[in-house]
Length: 95
Image (spheres, rainbow, N blue to C red):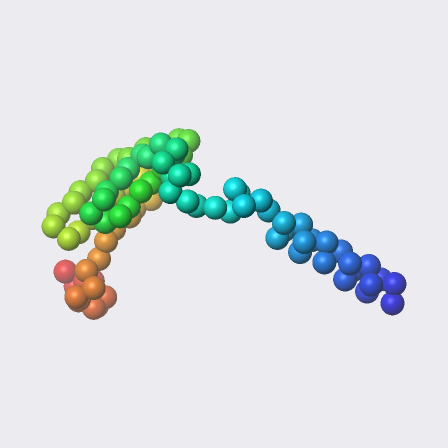
């Protein structure tokens, strides 16, 4: 009985510690994003990528309603692409 009570108390303490963050840590207001340096920004697609240590923009293409941006860090690549909602995934794969 004592072990289960201690376990329950420990779980409650962990839950309270995890949910007890400050408002500044959780907020994502526009004032905070204004202070960040952006590595890549595209207003047409409402896309903002903040600067992160070691990452760089390799290339970015905007062709009409399509966006492709490639970022690199050492041997890791991250790609952001936009897709049209007018075609199904099967039709996009065939093109």
